[in-house]
Image (cartoon, rainbow, N blue to C red; front, side, top):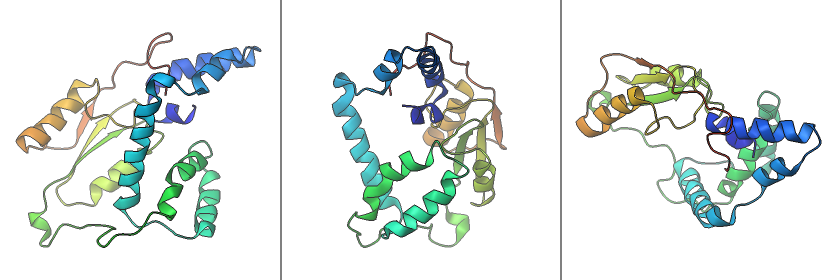
Amino acid sequence: MFLTAGYDDDYWPSRAAALSAYLRGDPEPLVALASPRAGSAAAAENGAAVYTAVECNDAPWPRDWAVWDRDDTRLARVAPSETWDNAWMNLPCAYWPPRPGNGRRTCAPPPARCPPVLILAAERDAAAPYPGAPEMNRRPAGSLLVTERGAGTHGIGGGPNGCVNGCTNDYLLKGRLPARNASCAPRAEPEPGRGRAAG
């Protein structure tokens, strides 16, 4: 339940209210948020299955549990709230049948023929910390970075930010990149009593 708050700040008010109630002796809001939702269980399971299929085929994964344990134990020292939940979510990849061609794909040389990359990042994204975005932007030639300042949503494309969506739509629909790295004002902060409760 709290892991989702690292992916979308719309969850913050409901998580904060539930935790506050729990600390005052009322566990019900916390239990309600953590409980499965019958109406969305099938969609959630389908989404998890698609996520697993994509994740496990995207790159080679370690096959030895000792490697997972060593790496995640080390990572949990700096990112305790995200590490083990994500490890369990991705663990099927240790047993996923490998297929020919699985693994990293690179653009065929010469690099000048590779399409430019548009990178979208939010400064408060806990799932993909922002310092990785400028680093990623330095790597592919001709890439550009669109930053949503002061926001904490993991997937900012197609969300409520018109500036981000304008850059994304120009890229996807017209093949146009911004003239330079773009900085977008944050979307509105989530308000108590509004935003997403489930997840």
